[in-house]
Amino acid sequence: MKSNVETLEDNRVKVSVQVDESEFDTAVDAAFKRIAREVRLPGFRPGKAPRRILEARLGHRVGREEALREALPDYYAQAVVEHDVDVIASPEIEITSGEESGSVAFDAVVQIRPLINAAGYDGLRVEIPKPTPSEEEVDQQIDVMRGQYAELEPVDRPAADGDHVTIDIAGTQDGEEVPGLTTTDYDYEVGSGAVVAEIDDQLRGASAGDEVEFDADHPDADEDEPLHFSITVKEVKEAVLPELDDDWASEASEFDTVDDLRADLVTRLTAMKIAQARMAVQQNTAEALAGLVIEDIPEAMIEGEINVRIQDFVGRLQQQGADVAQYMSSIGLTAETLAEQFREPAEQAVRVDLALRFVAAAEDLVPDDASVSESIAKMAAEAGQNAADLEARLTKVGQISSLRSDLARQRALEWLTENVELVDDEGTTIKRSELEFPTTDADGDSVGGPGEDSTEDQPAEDDE
Image (cartoon, rainbow, N blue to C red; front, side):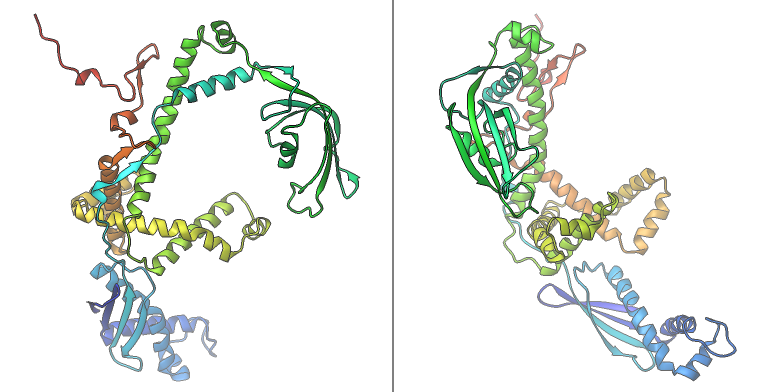
C-alpha cells in the first residue's frame, strides 16, 4: 500500500491511497470467506464453500464490493497513522480506480485539528479565592458554634430571619387536609426554607397573634393542585447566643480559651481555603486561556466532545444500576436536551485543548521520543506489563501521537499554573508560597504557613 497527504484549505487534507492488485486480492479472499458463512450451497457446510464456487454462483463483483466496504477503512486508518494526520471527523472517501478489477485507489478528504493562536498566554492574570480566611469568616464559624448553645427568648417585635416562631399550621389541598402539614405549637425557624418558600415570605414581619392564609405550589412537581396554608403566629422568639468567653470555649470545644479555639479555626479554615485556591488555579487558568481563542471552533470537534460527555454520563448511570431511559424521563431530559446541556462546556473544553497545544508548541513543551517512551514505561509498570510490548501495541494502533499530545497539554497546563499572575477578588497579588499547606511540628503545632518565609530564606546570623 502506498499513500500520500495533500494539504487543502479550511483545515482539511486529502489522503490518497493506492493498493496493488495482489494485496487487495487478499481482502477479496477474506470477503468471500465471510460470504461463505452466510450462503447455503448444496454439498458444502456453512463457511466451507470455496471462493471459485462462490464466484461462479454469485459473480466476482459481490466479493470485490464486500472487500471494498470492509478494507477501505483499514487502508485509510493505516495511512492516517503512517502520516500522523490529526483527524477530527469522518472522511469523505471517493474510489478513483479499482471498483471492477485491478489495483485499488481512493482519496479521503478529512478535517484535521486546526492550529489556533492563543497570543497573550504568557501575560495571563488569573483570579482565585483568597487562600487565607478573613476575621469575619472566623467570627461566623464561632457564631455557628455559639448558635448550637443559644437560648430562645420571647420578643415583642415582628419576626425576622433566624427567629423562631411558635405556630399553629394547617395545610390542605383541594379542601382535604394534607398529612404532615397540620399541627399545633410547632417551632419554626424563619428563613430556614422548610416545606415551601412561601411560609418564610409570610412569616417575615409577622407578630404574635397574626393570622395568615396563602396558597403555594406543591413541592412535588407531579402534583398540579396547589397547597393552601392557614397559620396562626403564637409567639416570636430570638436566639440569644452565649457569652463569648473562656468558660464557653472550654464547654463547647476541646480548648480552654477562646484564643486557642480561634487559632484552631484559623488553621482549619486556612487549610480549606488553600485547597480551594489550589483547585481554582488550574480551573480558572484554563478558563482564562480559553478566552484567548477567538477563532471559530470546528463543529466536528464540539460534537465529538459532546458525544464523549454523553457516553461518560450514560456509563456512570449504568455503573450505578440505573435505567438510563427511565432516569432521563424522570427529570425531563431527552437526547437532544442532554446534548444541548453539554454544548457550552464541550466548546469550552475544545478551546482549552487547542490553546494548550499552542502553548506547548510555543514553549517547546512537546515531549521527544525518549520522554514518550519513559511515560509508556511508567504506564506499563503501573499495569504490570512489559514496556516494550506496550509501546509496540500503542504504535501499531496509532496511539503514540495521541499520547504525545496528552503529555504536551499536561506540561503546558503545568507551565501556565506556575507562570500566570494570581490575584484575589480585590486584585491583590497572591504569592505561590501562600498556596503551600502549613506544616506541623511534633506536637501538632503549625510551623510557618501561608505567606510566611521559611527559616531557609532568612539571612544567617554572623558568628561573633
